[in-house]
Length: 476
Image (cartoon, rainbow, N blue to C red):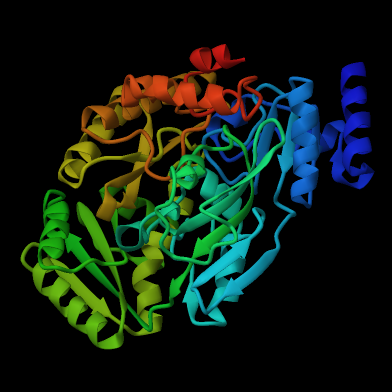
């Protein structure tokens, strides 16, 4: 307690009392994110600070570095991997209140923002100029741009538009010892830049383990003029990925392609019977966007391809009907949580990514794993890029069920690697998936550790994340 009091006193002296949080109850609010792991293990910080300038962040990092205090940057904490929780205590840098959109540069198609800007708020401002920031995570109304950059987030539009890294032109970063650098040139307004080592790419997706992102220069795109939704119903699961492949081979790149397997269809119909999805092994939803004429042509072409195997196909550009077609997908996560009256959906093994050719095998083997471990699951996801979301439903108060779902999640992560995929497609590594780093990356983990040691020799930046904990601990 005396140590905490001294820490709080020092932080107040650095940035003022109104930006330091130290009450026990308030600190508990920073001990978890959306992950199942943080539900079962509380990681309480010693203090929380809410800086509003690069200079304040620099002061805090210099102080933490001099005193060997762990620092965990945090946005809105919508993550599902324990990435923004302080597993070794110390200081939490809450950047969510630093939400300034500094500039929308319409002449050069870019925006400069501070890390706490909420994704949906940025797109609301960009829409005034006919622009948008394409990555679309499901937590758009909550997640912050800083968190998206740190985790290289994406979402359902990644098929056509890629992930966050494709839009980050430059960063301002406060290093673990307090120095401030810019990558990609914050003063530059050029879209193209191949000068020097690509440090921007290094920090994107580093999950706050190398420094604190304090300013982001983003590329933005013209907002599409038209949009359409196509739903295709498949009696046979194997026909769904084959249809996706044929759409690609036809030269069409939808903005998003989503899948609901029979478990998700059943969950949606039980949750909202009025949606009344057709009984089938799989439903695909194609979202197409662009110019009105091209969207209409592509929609009709996708319908022609889907009809080869689907029992039912519907294409629409009518806003009301599109919303109805999309409703089943939009409520899937909520529906999964209701499939068992005494259960809850937990985020464990929920974000693997596999090759398109392995999606069918992946879905079938996840079902087998669910039966093996006695865990009910609902499966859906972004089939266009092989990102499978599995929703286990358990009684989270049952230690026995917790043990079973942890074994189930471990098996899913190993299955992803076995199938030539990844343990995470868009939710990040955090604490949850760090143990699989060596399995997934092999000797490349040694290079990651060398980079970590070079930039953070005392190991104070978000320790316990991204890299195997026992190996990462040797940094300090």
